[in-house]
Amino acid sequence: MPEAALHVGSGKVRELYALDDDRLLLVASDRISTFDVVLPTEIPDKGRVLTGLSAFWFARTGDVCANHLLALRADGRSTECRRLEMLPIECVVRGYLSGSGWKDYAATGAVCGHALPSGLTESAQLPEPIFTPATKATTGHDENIDRRQAAELVGDELFAEVERVSIALYRSAAEHARARGIIIADTKFEFGLDEGRRLVLGDEALTPDSSRFWPLDGYTAGGPQPSFDKQYARDYCESLGWDKTDPGPELPDDVVAGTRARYVEAFERLTELDFDDYLADPEVVLR
Image (tube, rainbow, N blue to C red; front, side, top):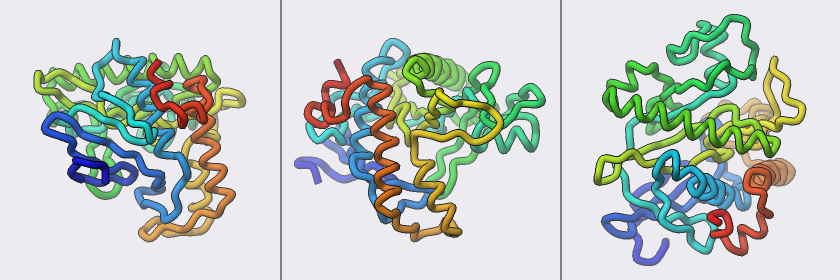
């Protein structure tokens, strides 16, 4: 445990410590979860990829929205951040039709209350990015909700601001990523309020765990896409006939290596930095 820090919570990937009344320490482990089950096998350096990429985006999106980042620690996986009153919704932006959005569209022609043109195929780019909030599940899957339900949870005025900021963040990041050969199909943000009731971006941002990253080269709508995230590990787990309940299966060495390579490639493409340079000096992503 970090010195002079009180452990206050655990997530699937992160450990959360209180440094004092105003600051928290988020430590990203190398754990990986598939289908909401943490697997017994870790992916080396995965936590450092998540931490470094989040810090990279925090440093470049401050003009769009304030964020919780105070400092990166030398281990490359720990972030000092401001305490926030977190909002009770997941803020998802979709630029392409995939995952639960595709399933909803195939069944109803709409996604979270957004009516979409007919005839779209899986992985198709949407005419405009859409904001599709979800509830925060303490166990199991988050549940997609519509705009009205989300506004009831946070209030109309704050909901409108969250929607505007989420889409602005997505547009900015998607443009940056596309120029570097990566499509951000969708992503999830988490926001909180500071003591002045100002909206602040928290948690992680635009990582392979919170987003779908697809290679631009070879992208063709009409089916699933290869990805730079844990889909590689997820596909392996599905191939076993596993029932998706705890305990999860062990990952073989080749799946571990393949998953790590995809995370590191996403980091290097998006930051245009060598991952080894980040390991040597994490603050390189802030410059």
